[in-house]
Each structure stands twice: as C-alpha cells, then as structure tokens.
Image 1 (cartoon, one colour):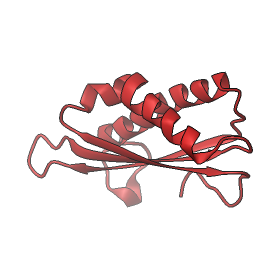
Image 2 (tube, one colour):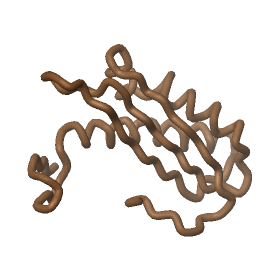
Image 3 (tube, rainbow, N blue to C red):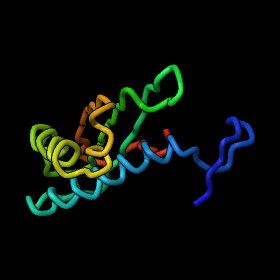
Length: 122
C-alpha cells in the first residue's frame, strides 16, 4: 500500500483519509453484490463514488460521508437496489459501523440497464 500526502500535481498514491473512503466503498460493495446475487439479480457493474466533509480542527475526522451507488443490471429495479444498499451500508459494513458514531453516512442509488459512458474515475 502506498500512502501519499503530497498535493494533487505530485500525488501518486492515496492519503489515509482517501483510503478510509475507499474502505467504506469496498466494504459496502462486497455485501451489496453478495445480497444481489442471492436475490438472483444480474450484476454487470457496481460503481461507487465517495466524498466526505472533514472537521475543521484537528483531529480532522470525517463529519459526513456521501456515497453514490450506480448499479448496471438488466433485472434489478431501483427499489430493490435502495433496500440492498441500506442493508449493505447500515447493517453489514464493518467500516461504516466503525465511524458512524461521529460521521453522518448518506447514500444515493441509481440503476442503469446497460453500461454506457461510465468511468469509475469520473
């Protein structure tokens, strides 16, 4: 693992706080995909964007984290994804549970039938 605290132009790795956002995303993704597969839903792709607000003074912990889940699936409806994401983030994700006492974690969802113009880096 490469930790990089440099500013954007010279940066080649992630900061510890960026890794925390990645950890929440990855943790939730594992549970979400597993639940969808148990429901016999097709998962072609799951893209998660994460951002957060940090405390102004040290320690600069996250006060809020926002996650957006984009599922590419021909057979999953929006309501099913909302329920599965709620389970994944609120009930099963250990990383989210580790910070939810000090951090407001919110999420939005969308379902696309096919992958068109999606880029995980956008």
